[in-house]
Length: 378
Image 1 (cartoon, rainbow, N blue to C red):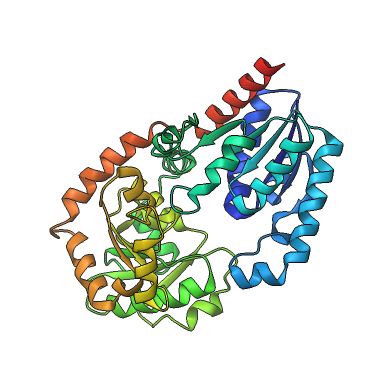
Image 2: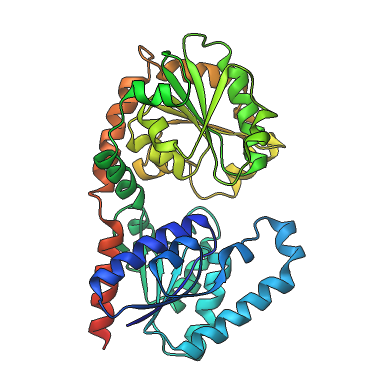
């Protein structure tokens, strides 16, 4: 069968590439055409556009590139219709992908499947109308989304979470000893606190400076930064001091050997929990009081971290906007270090979270269900 996929960012390229591998196992005749990245290209098929040419985030960048965005959208619409795949698989990236779905639904009979649900439970809940109208099947990687969509009389498939797959595969294949990791990176024998300060320069600047300022009250620990892909080492040097180390391409080994972590919200919070590393979620934003107000009155959810959202309660402390201060970081970090008052409780909650997420194999389950549903349609 012929599969057309569209992703809009690096995480989508990763998840879609794993889905494509699983589709090839479930369907020996699988052909791929896609808007994606290098990881998808490595699996095989025809890449018609790179997601890097389409990834505009934030109001001003989108506004400045509207003509390019519309041109890319028109190209994708025409290319999908021309190739006439057996299914269109959209991966996250809702601002673009839901427009594509609307057009394909109106002009063709191509089934439309969505892998990794748009996060409409956080905001823009009105998009449920578009999903119910235009999307035939939705495959979720977050268990709480099942109840959210059920509330809207829309049935979805929970297939498991790819982070479980990735962490499980790492732990099964790369058992590195602590001393080897320390020697490799020139670290000391002090226990490690990992700093995961985000993947974008503004995030890193805002979060890392405060994390490092807080670290000065913990002389018995060494603080090690997980360098983000695509960010040059020189950029980090503007914000680090002589007591802080950095490692690149080693986030999982770093978490494997960390005693605790300070983590900027995102997938990293979930990965940190899967490694059973107690953490404080730290996300600074400018105009903190305004952002906190908007968060309380516009966002539909109580939490920003995937850990708390999946658990349905506060497992990890979230220091967000005006709450992310150096004194607050120090207080919350102290509580999760060995002998800290929150550490044991957090580790117990992590075990419950891991049970909720289920076993590894998200990509394989999604691919198996996709192929089965398509064969049933035929």
